Image (cartoon, rainbow, N blue to C red; front, top):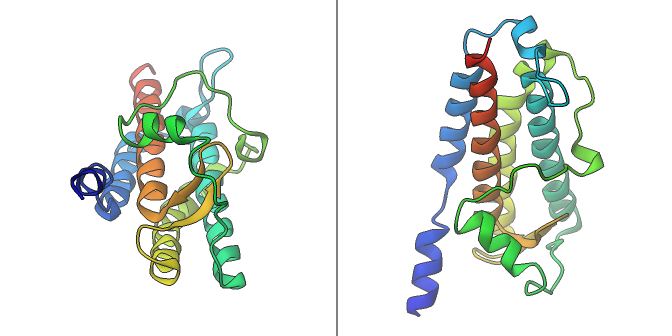
Length: 180
């Protein structure tokens, strides 16, 4: 029981963390013009491309969870052990490996900045809502859907992943803003 309590404390329900994520991203882009958002060092993403990437991850999670809700069953595969260490590194330690290549479906697509800034915060809210609905429907603490790299994850793990991933990229945006 102690192990379960420790896990719960580490993966505490991070609903408020997604609100914090919205605040961090808003602060990171505050005062940036469209030109500022488009500027980037050679071979690196711009702030707009980072936002595009994040928004695509939020849309993917929403679609994944909505698919599970429509089918009436969890979309999580039964094997949680094969990718356990990758999940622990990101979710328990909050470590997001730098330099990791993003999967093709979440590579920036050149979405207009005005669309990104209008969508991204709404998609974080929608994502939290659909994750919560999956958690209620499929059982609190049960895996709800598979992440393409980290495997089957619970609602708390999905929230924690997006919080860690978003913080990682918010820091990058802040560095880009400060380098102008």
